[in-house]
Length: 112
Image (cartoon, rainbow, N blue to C red; front, side, top):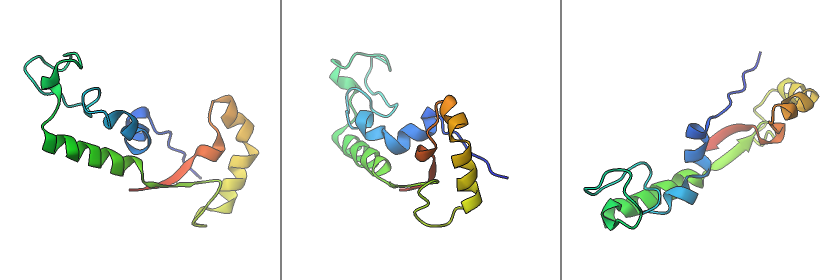
């Protein structure tokens, strides 16, 4: 028996797309907003930006998390996935495609 976990945006974004948004300090400060005008203040309000130290940490962390190594089930780069599982996925590729899932994009690991 095998389980495929479908990662939600909350899981996938930090590990794949974070730098696209998290690399922009004023626009998307990884859920943190500073200043006196609350979390919905416009980007023109410079008080929302973190201090230079926190901003540099944010850029480092978002870069590190989004530039990790990935492995894919079908490619089986480490040769640690049961070949029967890969065969079953290939046999049912059209059924996964009908659900909008390309079996070639199913990740087996994320190395950060």
